[in-house]
Length: 108
Image (cartoon, rainbow, N blue to C red; front, side, top):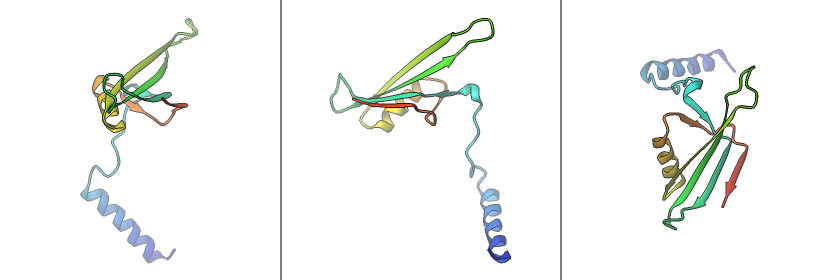
């Protein structure tokens, strides 16, 4: 890559950062993030035109004195689309759901 191309590329990045302060996403504290390990999709029992999305996460609260203190948290939401159901789940909890560590996806 030539120096001119590299300088143009760096100039574009600097301009984008200067103009738009929200160019990079805002960071989140680890205490405010809920890591989801299992996600399930199923049709809603009340209304067959809606789908239900369920998030299951495991919270490990064990210390050196109390071993095996695990809390399993289940949150469900329904909507006409998966995005709407996930948005309804977000309204029920104060933590942001992180879907990067999903182990299982269940489709019913």
